[in-house]
Length: 190
Image 1 (cartoon, helix red, strand yellow):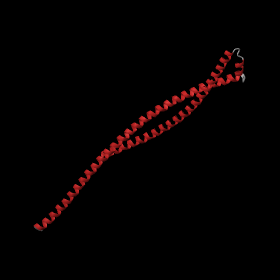
Image 2 (cartoon, rainbow, N blue to C red):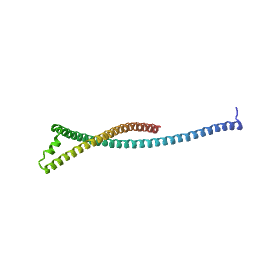
Image 3 (tube, helix red, strand yellow):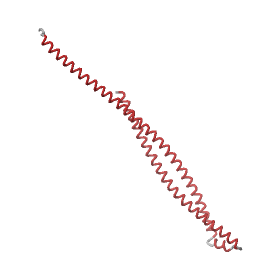
Image 4 (cartoon, rainbow, N blue to C red):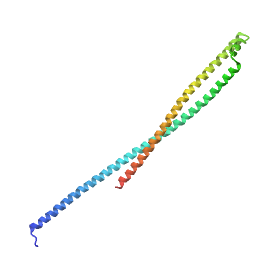
């Protein structure tokens, strides 16, 4: 079978046409690969930025946890101090009540009436007045301390809840960070 120039050029044209289509397809594939590579690079960079942000958030949560722990320690010390003072003041008040009970109901009257001179009467009155003022101030201080203790316990409870919440948040962020780092490694392997 002999080839004629016209039949050969038709076959060659089809080959070139197929080759051109194949080349165009390859070019589209290369552009697609470059686009995917660009997308992967962008994705890797985005994952890296997210990981950095999450790491900063974890460090911030660590700092908050340290601050909250310091607040808890400070509040605990203050609470213990206030409770100790309340115990001391209550002991003082109990001793005063016992002393008053032992002396009987007429002690104040007897103390005033047993004075031999007017100066002694004024001195005894002044002593009894100062004792009453002191007792009132101790009672007032105990009431203040009870309110302070109640407030500190509420604060301590709030701080402990906040501490627990921050620990949970930190754990979630650390898990997110590990996940982002794993995604970034997987992306960089592609």
